[in-house]
Image (cartoon, rainbow over all chains, first blue to last red; front, side, top):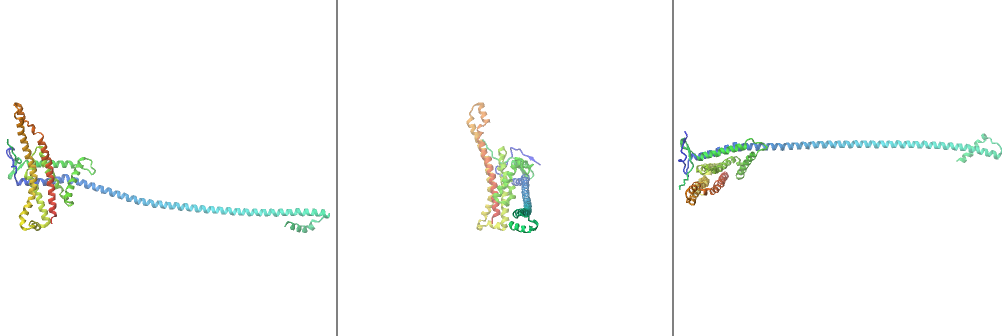
Length: 173
Length: 247
């Protein structure tokens, strides 16, 4: 089928037009289009697409993580807030109770002091009365002794007791 | 001194008179090279790139995508592989001449084929955007007499594109060949009179052919190759975009 031709002898003219050669040039060009598509553009575009997808996915993941972090942060914030308010209320309750207790203690102390003061007053009064009575008795005895010496006559303490008492009372008052 | 400037060598012939020349074979080599390079770049890619290969692959794809979408708009994203194929094929078909091989872009059939593809796309989008009647009507504007000129203008686009690229690459080859031959002649003129073995050595080893052709090759092969591939893609994009936008 193939008929080799002596290379040196046969050449085309410098300017020749051959429809087969034109068609072959077109065919070669179109074949090269397919070759480039298959060996260059398809693989590269596939890789670029994959990379784009991966980057998109990375962005999506980042967004998701960010929103998750945000919700978690909100959650912790509310938890923290509630803990804080709880602590506040605990402290407030404790301090209130402490105040109440201290007031109670103070009140008790005051009552106790009052009670003691009152009993002390009573004691003092009692002692004063006793002392006064003793004094009165001594004075009455003294008076009687004195009067006996004055009148040189025994005074019957019993007979005159009432009278002397009256006198001392007037004196004591 | 005789200089032969010819087209591609015919390597073998298929039935129906289909001749396989250096143009086709070299273009297949370029395509094979591009395919292997891309397969090497993109094998074992990871979502987190670990190799420089992958970064180069992603850079290439993004650059072409950016190149197309910035010129044509976001909805032409599907067109990116076509422009990538067109640019790489045109570029490496020109640059293959650096390896001393016949550049497929200096064969008019190659550039004509690509230009015809552009023409088909332009016309398709003009008809798709305006409807067949609208397209036919646009050929008769501004006045009916202009119709032949308009039709000529439609065909002028691919023809100028095909000849622009072909002319640049082929003329580079021609100019390089001429300069190369001229340097050989100059070499003989300067050193040829040397007696005996020195003269023969100078003839066999034309030292003047060192240097200048390499600089010219830098311009014709590298600079012109890149520029023409870029221009071809740019024109294709702009023509097709404006075809899809016409009212």
